[in-house]
Length: 149
Image (tube, rainbow, N blue to C red; front, side, top):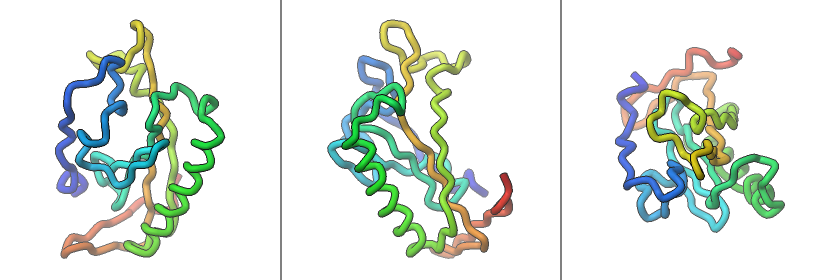
């Protein structure tokens, strides 16, 4: 059923650095939030209702390279999104993952690179989790693995 909630992930050509996150916000139709430091967009597949991706506005290779302002604003954004998902859909918790493997996939013919070296972009995938089914516009979303590792 999750495939029913996938949307087109078409984007303009990659910028010069090849990064799939380094787009001008005007070219990203699935944005939820834009600040000077961060972007928040819907996750391409809604395996969990309300899943989204939070990524830096500038190209940052490692979490340790985030500025104090970026860390601070990340906390504000996460708090607001958590509250919104709790109110809108009854999310019980949010799972956060910061896996930056995409830039290193050998099977990707066009990985994001800078000078031929893989160039990840700091981002988090956020998956709200539900201890019950949620209905939105007549569609039922289930979370059969709630509470599982």
